[in-house]
Image (cartoon, rainbow, N blue to C red; front, side, top):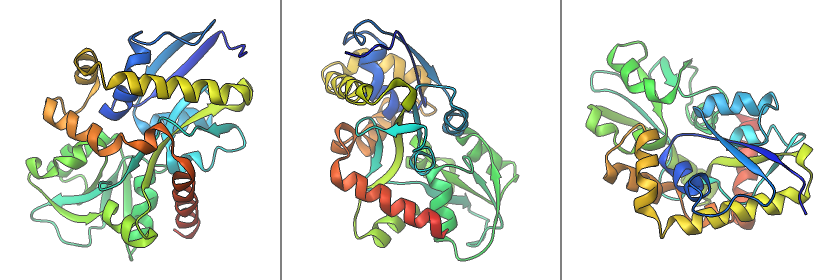
Length: 266
């Protein structure tokens, strides 16, 4: 029996997080017994900082950041974002070169940035900013290229951008086809190890309920998403909500280990 009376849960506003947690947020499934869950939404870079400061009990973090939190957080098996065919994309305006010197990035602790450092064979100047400002920063020529994540990475062509590097493909080529761990759900160890299975099961129940309640989840997804067109939100969910979101399993853990090795060498 768990003893948590108040549970803070912080996730990003991107469609895959909203889809996974939506049934829990909206009360389609009951809250944890004897517990009051309160949800917060923040940019992934803010979530990474919150986790580093022990500010929240359950939090979505970049997978690369989760590897640095293991002294204070458990990494849950459910609720994560793994790319099977998709990943972050380095893009630029059509008049930019192929070796940009100033690159707008969605945070220095994001998986996307760690992969970019490993993939590029030259030094560059990262310009950190919220992910939803990156395209605009390119148009204003504040940076020569931008590292896109979330749903914007799926529609970069609509902004007139050219693809320089597909990090999802780079990952596949360098890990013999492992899924790309982009984000994980972390649970603070102050809650106790017994809460791991409780919260993991709650997330799985929420995700399973989402499939039968898509119309009820869509207003919440639209309210929070950067790209609000239903087709784009659906593409985002299809890209990053999969069997690894239910349970990363041994393959997901192996992928995290591969990311750890890449991070150490980047």
